[in-house]
Length: 217
Ligand code: BMP
Image (cartoon, rainbow, N blue to C red; front, side, top):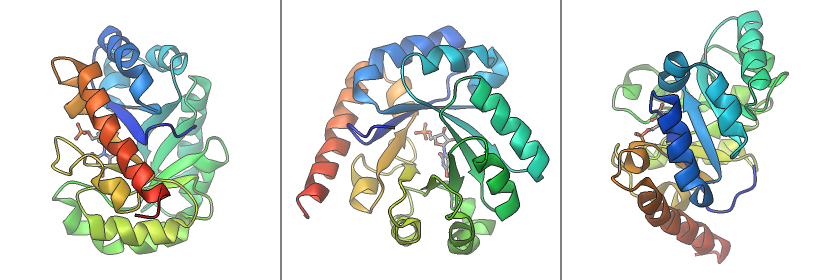
């Protein structure tokens, strides 16, 4: 996925036509679209194929299962046109590897919501270290910059994608400043009265943060 702005749209709307409309309106401001259960469980996998005609699709199925089921889910995502898959890392190396043999996988190491503190944050570094070898990249929370920085180091030169920007409280640009390569933004874009304006504004902040980093700031 070519990085132009450092911004990924999380398209958690449920209606397929609305999803396509939002995606078409924000297309020039985002590098990829992340699609998850709200959209595909309501509207079916065909929408993935149509979105993939507009831009790279990351299938966020947070795969967390035994390896042969992981592989089956990855094949379904791949056959629908997704370019990447998101899988949980806590299920272990073999499960992530089963996904990665089918599609490049971003591995969830830590999460952005307050409840992540209960179980996943304490093991996030172990999860990332164990899975990084087979991962295409790591998912790390914009709402926990310290965790994000640690996971960035573990990811090495692999991309870190970071949710939690906008509606969950992290400021646009902040995750990139903490070491992420892309910020993932959902409601702050698709719930805005004019999604293309919101995307343009957020993209100017992510792109500025990338440019600062490029200058060694
Ligand atoms: P929003 O910007 O509307 O808060 O959406 C965030 C998106 O990132 C959602 O699609 C959610 O599933 C995803 N996400 C997250 O919020 N935190 C994580 O730790 C991992 C995620 O994939």
